[in-house]
Length: 166
Image (cartoon, rainbow, N blue to C red; front, side, top):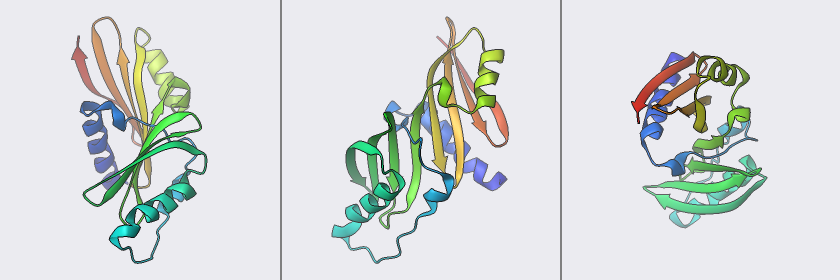
């Protein structure tokens, strides 16, 4: 379990300093669904179709899909039940990750309670759910008059990872 937390934490740290287009949605994917493996041999011309096939299985309610391919990975931005999301797929159609925009109601109950009780003078600025490596993690950026605070929530607990003065 600890070996899986490090890649998730690394992804959280990258995303906390990266562009906001990675902060996206993924409400209906269940962890077991992320293990879809297409075993067919993939020709270059079939890469996009293989990723799209996996995507349609994992996200049957997705709309407004926008696809791109970079370095052998396929990326899609989309709406999933009205929430923005971004997902990455390998050339064989395996999902690397999905990142979903969240509001306070989409965060796990314990995480939102922690925010409300320990950061009562802050407002939620931005939050995401990250599903990768068979795990789910959350990141919340809170704001008050003087600071931004970044929190992460994993199966290991809740941790403050960064504070930035305005």
